[in-house]
Amino acid sequence: MIVEPKVKGFICTTAHPVGCKENVKKQITYIKSLGENHCPKKVLVIGASTGYGLASRIAAAFGGHADTLGVMFEKEASGKRTATPGYYNTRAFEEFAQEEGLYAKSINGDAFSREIKEKVIETIQKDMGKVDLVVYSLAAPRRAMADGTVYQSVLKTTGEVYTQKSLDLKDNTIKEASIEPATEEEIFATEKVMGGEDWYDWMMALSRAGVLSDHAVTVAYSYIGPELTYPIYYNGTIGAAKKNLHSYAGKINEDLKAAGVSAYISVNKGLVTQASSAIPVVPLYFAILYKVMKEKGIHEGCIEQMGRLFKDKLFGETPVTDAQGLIRMDDYEMREDVQAEIRDAWAKVTTDNVKELADIDGYWQDFYQMFGFGMDHVDYTADVEV
Image (cartoon, rainbow, N blue to C red; front, side):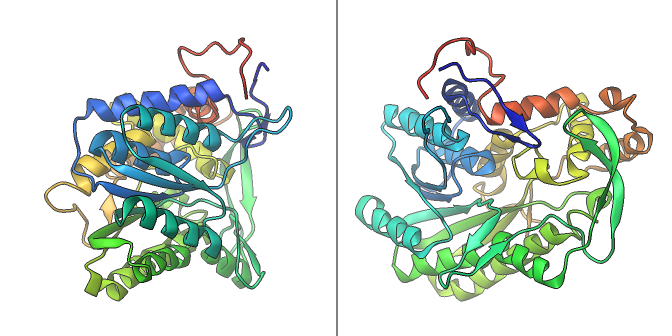
């Protein structure tokens, strides 16, 4: 069939298999251009099919010649419905890895569940022996617990109603968005879904099963952002979940100290992802950020961030952290000259000048490429097998 993008709000309901493969290939080419990194050789990536998780898997395999096991939750094609982009990304990644003689296996299922944890442990025991690196890059809207309780995350502020400029993705206009404060129950639920409890559960399960190597490393991904977005992000429900995630890094370090495990949080740059597109206010900030950073020649996407993380920050001579022990991959974003220009543009931006002050085209290019559209060297008029 001929596959075209069908966008509803901040989600594209179709994905292009050939475009997704081209996207993966492009990321592999970039990682190879950096030369070898010193990534551990047996790697588990939890949340491995899109965004930072996929980029991590590519950096490990094609920059560090690592064997990788990926966990994702993706849908296959069904009738006229295409598979999800992560499904096509994973299939392409495995193809490219196998061509180079690298072990690459993926387990499709709910990473929160005990069943998938057990399946992963069995696979490591059978195929890899032990893993040296665990990347935790899970992004999910809900979490089902073993007792049947389901927690749903919310994207809200805390404290009081927050009103701010926002980019309406339906028509690229600037409107005011008002975000209601979350209840205590909603904050708790968001921490359950997006916080660090499941990361901790994974690490303890892997440790108990004896499948972590001596001095294994684990890293989870976070975002802080500037004061401009604090009410909806850092001081909102998602920020509460990220602070919860940070606290679990300390808990993993403490509880697995005897095993020599080191847990890190990498605070990454703000980027267009399926998750970030859903957060009011944030897409406008990202579009302005893209313009400023591109003009300064310091813009990075997921693969550039993970290339730099693996080569320079996490697996150099010693991990490079700030005073709080965080790896700051947002160092270029948070430069004062960058933020000063963003604040200036934010004060001036309207529907009339948004295309001058923000990189709207770049925002949408990244959005469509997540689903395999807008890639060079792909004939989108051709009939493809989905």
